[in-house]
Length: 192
Image 1 (tube, rainbow, N blue to C red):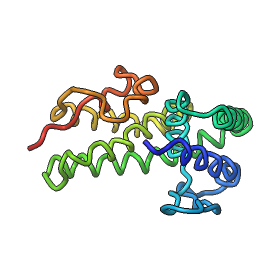
Image 2 (image 1 turned 180 degrees about the vertical axis):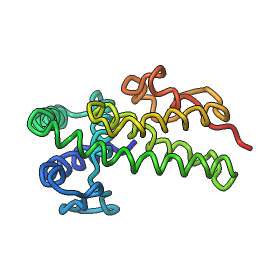
Image 3 (image 1 turned 120 degrees about the vertical axis):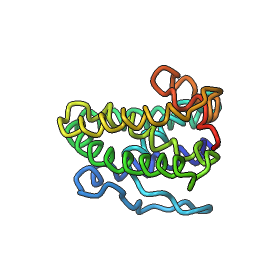
Image 4 (image 1 turned 45 degrees about the vertical axis):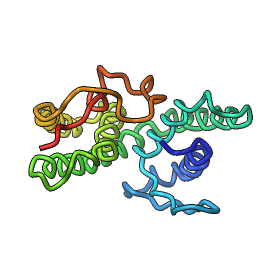
């Protein structure tokens, strides 16, 4: 999980450009703003924005009053986007779902073929979480159904090598990602 200062700035930058992003054909949108110090920002994706907001929601207790006010404004801004751009969000989520599915499938193949070790799982499982969050946004889109079916198939493959256990991300995120829906965050693939 990124520090809350970073997440606040990142979400702000992303939401500033969200309308242009939704109107574009791009799935991975280069942000025009830069952080004053540190590594370059990732590209704007709907999944990245959702996970950043999820992290901020989990970090809310750690925020100062001014940061909490900033988070409140970001939530309002996101709600306005959801209201005004419902179809655009669904369309963009549908586009990104394909990408996240492909990345997750490739990672599982690498684990099964012993090309990839399970140590990277904590990072790579972001693709599976993004898929889940995006698919719930795009559930009204008929073209999402084949991707959801394929993910169910991939989940069956993962369950064959999955060892249930502790939550693999920052414990503050457990309330955001409950075990019944996000079971793959509660354990690791067994080493081969």
